[in-house]
Image (cartoon, rainbow, N blue to C red):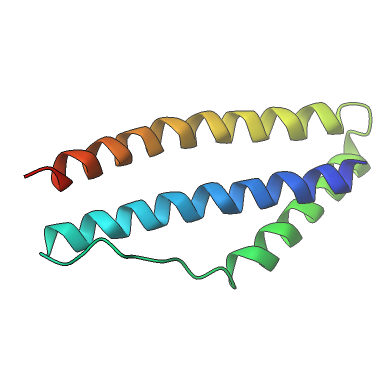
Length: 100
């Protein structure tokens, strides 16, 4: 269950990072006078984040087996809270720049 949870969380983190990257790139496009049509490459992130998550889950399961799930969930929630704050700031800047 821990490994499946790690893979699911890593896919969510990939989605969060893609949203942040696209928004930041769209801000750059608008600052340079271009249309906001940025994209994100999924190849390096998709297998890399999952491998890191499985490795972290294995380390947690090996050294702290009783608290591994709780630590994994806690780390995910902390990362998501920081991401939500950062993404909110990016979206506000994007909206501010987009309006003439």
